[in-house]
Image 1 (cartoon, rainbow, N blue to C red):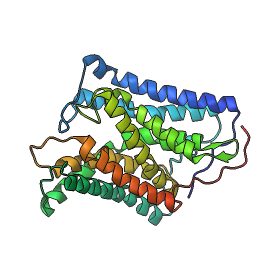
Image 2: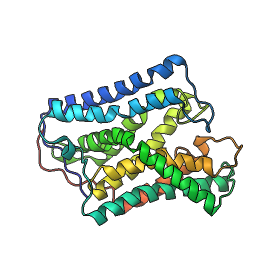
Image 3: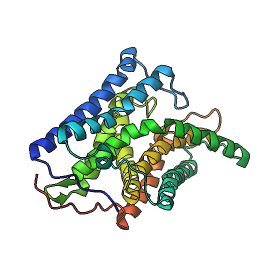
Length: 302
């Protein structure tokens, strides 16, 4: 597994970097979402697609973590190339790259299938059936849409996986995996607060339901993305996995449901309890087999 501990920094520089990163990432999200918040936008239908203004605001918001990471690495921490520090590299050799890019698609796809199966068995997902021809046509379209959206997910994962997780994982020459996973997962989840207040991920749910649900969802999804990043030695498979979860996986929920049935993400997606069961099982397996173990920190004093 490959994750290089950040170079040793004075405590004040390290703390200033973390605070600067979080300030830019969170401020960027709130500023980007402000037109919708001022407008009083509220998503109440799980089938509704975002309009032009919503797409523009979402796109701007998703770039904030990457901007924050670049600013901190270049102007607060100083030294080192941004691409190397944030693991923005193509996995090598090519067979290795292909294997982990495929895993970044197939693993979230499998988790979604399991979540839908659990929801169907529990009677909360209105499965409407599927045909080979219809599924193939949908899959081709969905994957193209994911590829078109892919640059936006670099905006998020260069921040969470590239910058924040390593900074929380290594301190004073010690490796702190629990701090890294819990801290990054919480920051990742709470960054979505403006969209949660507008019903973005959980249409029709009040904030006191949506926020804890997002904390659970991000807390379980983050280790899966981190596994892809650790095993490949690159942030790119984590980007692809995140893109799949946020685009194709959500499209799967709509595609295989009965046409007129209401969709409730809290009950029938990776963002809901069936998905939590599926992801928790995978995370437990990854942890049990040592695949989530972070490499030892280099001796350092900060």
